[in-house]
Length: 285
Image (cartoon, rainbow, N blue to C red; front, side):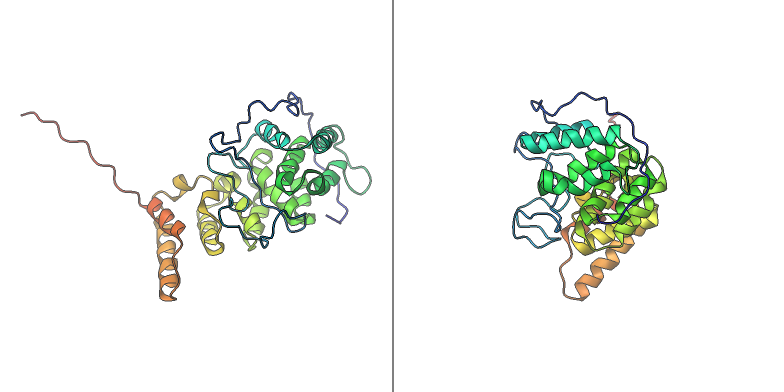
């Protein structure tokens, strides 16, 4: 993030109890496996492995999604997210995050060419590491109570990682459709991490049927697991137009000698679920 920004949204104070030192219960962790939120690293941040940007190593969690049994960044409440992310930080990073959240709540105005909480969003990757940077940025946006205007500013002037955080924060910060241009912009890219963040609860709530169908197809085109698509079962049910699009896409792949993604068959099944067996007729003998 290198460009100056205009005035930020007006935040409210974060009055929740400080969970930074209390990690006894972590609702975002699958206690059966010991795993939890694993946002994908951004190429602009230090990498923890040699996986090419936009891909996933075999056996790893898909970009931007979570391990089985966990809650996604977009679906987690701020309290759940804060409990989880701080449990994985060391003491210096935990202290930095506490200060960043306090600053975001206490200094909502613009101080110079850029607001203080936007500076903290920019440095979250360096301070918290790539594994926890997405969650830290989302928490800062929550603490700042960023509205649609502020989120748009961060998105369009930010790095890919900052854009991803904005998309994850949308469901809790923007109740109406004002954030749709950001989702639509992300859906035009081929960045699998942005796409994963874009098809979360906010998209499920506000994308119209035409846009939503194309978002599902975009996931299939780019290899984003359909598990990332929020509310997939409900929105796909009985959608004959989506079924037609999926069938056409499968036919094109087959004609070209290419495999059809397993996720396509899964979504196609959702569009026309098997009829519920009728109850057996009573025997009045």
